Image (tube, rainbow, N blue to C red; front, side, top):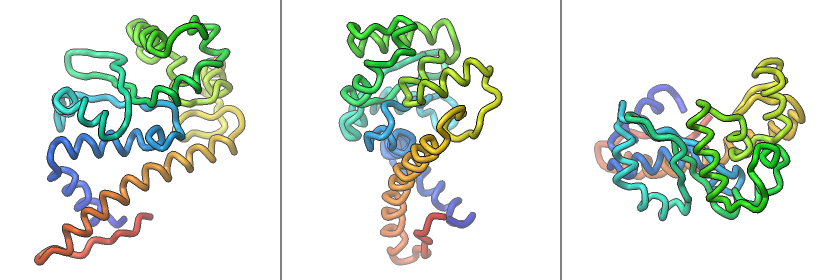
Length: 208
């Protein structure tokens, strides 16, 4: 996508109805979760800029239903809300046998909702508790590597800092990127239809 097309793309998003604009933001960021690749996704909504927080409060239940996602408020402040998007069965199956979580009091006998509540409590104590990485699909060896190395000495960096099994991480990164690109392509198809109307300009559909 060249610079001119990118600017037009962003302008097009701004012209979307407020609900559709919010839905696209969630759809794009949570695409790997929607595609059952990533157990959960964290998105922060604030009052600044596009006032996404108020939009989220207005359209939350509609968007959850349309995207077939569950959501859980992890941290709320006066000006922002940090929301975890997930699919219940996918997330529950992913974290239920985690030794890392078990060592931190997330017992196998606990329901998923109880574990989410415990994680929310941890967000009250720390800005970003380490165990949230497990919920987000980061391998335990990389979460432990981050802790043991204070976030330094990593092999590579993508959606997280990688300390072991870089090829496995690269594979996941590519799958995440592919899921997000599919969302962009869907929106571009809408733009192309719009631009084919009389008076519209040609829009380059290739993403590179």
